[in-house]
Length: 122
Image 1 (tube, rainbow, N blue to C red):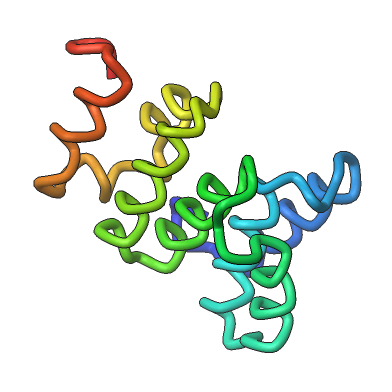
Image 2: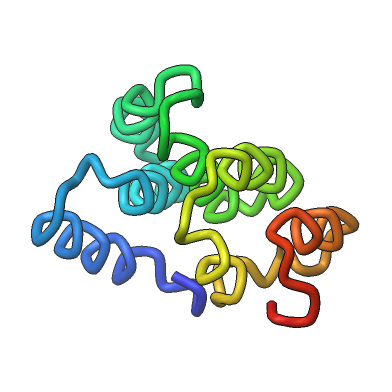
């Protein structure tokens, strides 16, 4: 996905989802974002309904990933704030990863960095 090969990424994320729980927010967010990028809005919208209003535990991380995949780092930052408030343990790993590269270039990066309380570790 990071290389821009969205068709290959779609196959990989579908396979990963089949090996785990498709309801896992991380995979659902990635899958919905890829589907949207590939013009499969109906399927993407169906995936997004799993997140409801975004308040359930885990939903913010799925919506953050969805927005990163879509290329909307500012919206992703809003959802990362909510995920951090839920104390989602996957946040530091995600923020270090290649998918968050665009997020690291926004003014929100310093805020997120402070919120997780790990100066210098991301």
